[in-house]
Length: 221
Image (cartoon, rainbow, N blue to C red; front, top):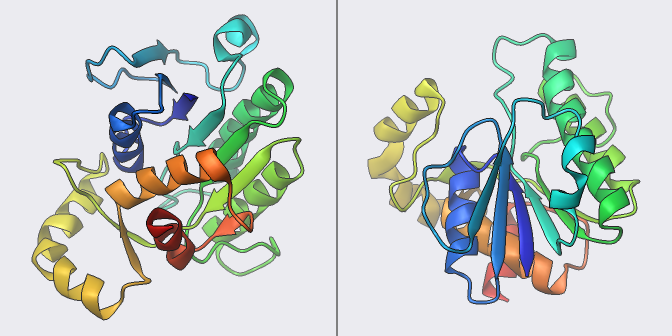
């Protein structure tokens, strides 16, 4: 498989990239983002660019892929809805619309979040915007799947780029094994998310929205 990864320097993206590079059936992984990952691997190629709203100048480099794993995103904390939507909805659809034209029917996996509001009219701002993004993706000529993880356990030395999240992970890390046993359908690891994306790219899934229990189930299938 040839796979595109957006947001490979983030916590989830790092985990997804790691699993892709370890997978025997992935021959090429191409990352797209504003910063290089710093990873060295013969299967990896990186596209570093500041403008993530238009791809007309690199369409040839985005053609011929089997799947796209879109993990790019920001925290909504302290953001106005218009600003959050400009990044969350705008950047996602800019990439997805381009890829639906260049690679019609490709598998597109979008990292959303547990509690996303598909109605687009709920009280939570981030959930409305994520829901609007999901709905727009599902209307495109792509095999689109929405991943809705909850608490994500970072493995393999991976860390969040958000300082607050790093502090919280350090505080709760000793409790995570207990929490996983007590609430198995509330926590997934970066490793599981990456493996689940690859599984969906290989054989699809019975429904387009994968909640935490679905992400765990597809890994074990």
